[in-house]
View 1 (cartoon, helix red, strand yellow):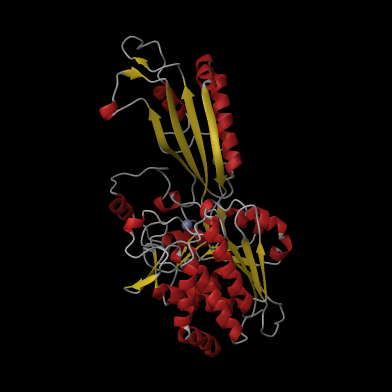
View 2 (cartoon, rainbow, N blue to C red):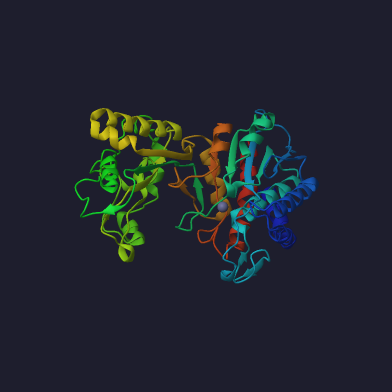
Length: 467
Ligand SMILES: [Zn+2]
């Protein structure tokens, strides 16, 4: 601990210089779909890594470049050899609009009330920069007891379409990795430091029923022309029961059973019905009625109608039978469900309906069903030995016991990396809950940045120990 405090002191003493560096990085408008700024940011990173890393490589893809870097251990080798950790970050940022809502310009970083305001400071430049600083400070004192690898994506905000290409092309770089960290997004709304062990996946489907040539008078043709809204609702009713359970055959077949540690962590989150009722302004709950609430939002898949359209209402109301109706569904997936399997199950469900009657057949034959590419779920069991080391490091770094979230309710584009690595993956955000990522006035509290660097130094130390 004496030596690690020396590393932390070194960081604290040099904090102003590191912040100056970070500000330079933040000034580069590396908006995901704008080549110029992205290129500039990749060059800035390359130059930073040139003076810090033992190895770095800029990999050009058909989209934005991906950058790899590596630091070799500089402590004596223990009996078990060295571990290898991979850290993921992304240097592209969201577009800053609407500009008139920013108090200071998005690409002119400014500190106000202990917060750095700039586009990308939380999502994700400030967060991965905290790790870069921690690695540099650790290597300065010859305390790096493990091998560290870094991957910097340039297209995360566009769904990382070329990450797979790099993961395949550079297989060797990734093949000895033991575990993966990602510091992105905000921490838990309770303001406690957070370790997330996974995220639900997602798949979406659109069913478009075009049942007639035209919208027609509901009096002249009422009772003759079929109503597509009613018919789509009939189809939907075959997909979910009154208790919120999805009726699509096989939907729950591959759903995992969470381990004891995950169940305990979910309980410790202490999310009461009152908490949800208050924050959402609701009086009753959706989803599977016989499953505990916190389990419904992480351990169970969901069936959701994200939108439904047919005919006209309010000031556009007309007494017609519409000619068409469309519904969009999203399914949140848990381990070990796969997006393409769920698509197949929806397809089989519709085929089975068709086989039931001539009327179903004619109705479904007029439906056009399309799917968007989905995300698979990400999940690392909580009962692995790494959990203890991570909890200890985050607790020391933040001075508070972290919240453990077995699965985030939402979905992350990181599933590509997860599927490729097949290694334990942890999301440890260094951004405070109100960082406003993707919104005007995105910010990162200086205190959280500093605690992030300290936590990263401790993570490197504790994972390097006993090697
Ligand atoms: Zn983002």
